[in-house]
Image (tube, rainbow, N blue to C red; front, side):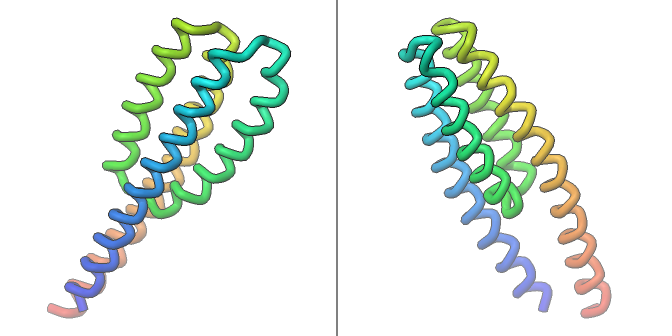
Amino acid sequence: MPVVVVVVVVVVVVVGVVLVVVVVAVVCLIVVVIAAAAIVVVAVVAVVVEAVVAVVLVLVEVAVVVIVVVVVVVVVVVVVVVAAAAAAAVVVVVVVVVIVVIVLKVEIAILVKVLVLVRILVVEEI
């Protein structure tokens, strides 16, 4: 039984990593568009960022602490690039980072619950 639980956790982690990489690619593409766009386009970009945040919220539920580190590093790099490009784009990216960090706190809580469940199952198996 513990082997099955470990396999399930590994599959969830791998799927989460792939999904987060896709989301990070989409976020990077949006940031490039924001940097190239005029301030008038910021209202339209806000709608797109809102959709990306909704996708991130869904994907983060299957992520783990390793994914948190990857997302934070990529977002920090994106924030640095955007800061050089346009101040308005930096504001939008910082809001996305804050939302992602808040959501990742929830993910960590879920991960802790899964690890407690795995521990209980292992103890019962022993």
